[in-house]
Length: 159
Figure (cartoon, rainbow, N blue to C red):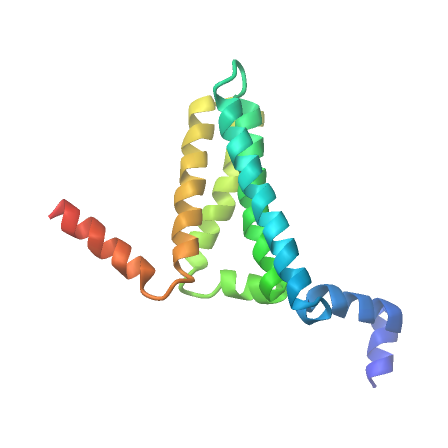
């Protein structure tokens, strides 16, 4: 029956194995996963910093938006090496992270739209700030009680 399902789906055993290997982090050793996480995360930070440096150049707003967005995307994608892409996507869209994930992904897209299609520099910067805030809030969701602590801190500062 399983063979029939693979034949009907158009995938042979080799393709099935490759797909499973790509989607399963256990096919990589722990040290390899950590190394690639570090490389991807560091390149994401480097792109974000480079993008910020481009902001100060004349006409560098497009490079800023592109590099900053690529940097945040690479930093987000780096966690796929630690837990695997399927598990990462499942965790991203859990109810506790759903809203911030949508805001984060939309801010990635809207940043690029503001720069390339709408030609609105101010909007691009605003969406980059939104990217930063969404990524921060998203990252805090993985630390137990971190978002609660941040909320208490802000409410005590405002009260």
